[in-house]
Image 1 (spheres, one colour):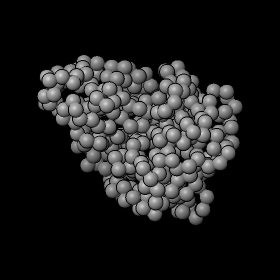
Image 2 (cartoon, helix red, strand yellow):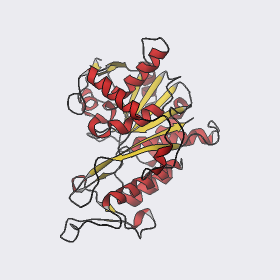
Image 3 (spheres, one colour):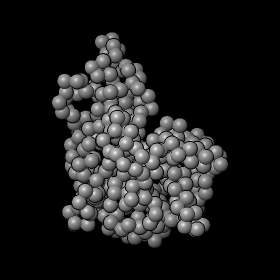
Length: 342
């Protein structure tokens, strides 16, 4: 089949390749190599050190329009260790079609304004042969933004690495659309992907925004300062009383708190801890299912003793929001960047 078009170029991000390349370079340059100063950033695991992280082969990064999430995503891409990468698995949530499991692309390449990304047809064929994966139709594939918004960054990082090595070719891509998977499905797909995850030649990119807060998202969960657990919050309602801006804490600080609890659950490395957290808060982490699949795969590797002590756990180094909500009429989307060293 032909190449997937960059259907969101020109709207969600620029379609001008030269401008896009300079934009990505600028955001990557803004990511300080030493990030000790991020200890003070709200809602963030107190992680210090330098990037790239040797052995970091898994990242979580956002997929909103680049004017919103492009700078935050740069932190994850700069943290990734691309030095041994021969293949990139890209997992993103399905926004436009119901999917009970996971689906593979039928295209042979993905176009970006920076150039084309080849798909790893043999690996895709091997996954298809398991009988567990569906196939995306071309229209569903091109409608979905959760995969496409990562393609320019992937192309940029792979091209930079190829240039360092004096190569002109770049490693291929394995895009996987993850649907509304339940706990058992996430563990099943995690077990299928674990043999790929353990190989140091494979990098994994997990596409996810975090809290989508506001009436337009049908999510107005609020954690008062008196709350002790994730489930002790409540939903603000559009009434005269709730039009007063809560101040203990402010809504934006409550959102950061809810996101922080989700990040801490992910950092435990326990798939079930994330599910329990999301059950308590209802946090609208749109990539919760691809995150769950990769967490399940990491659990398999730890259980099999294939991950060194202290490795195989997510660590977060960036947290941003599109805006700071003060009242029920406001809205925001949260963006995080994280990585896993293996």
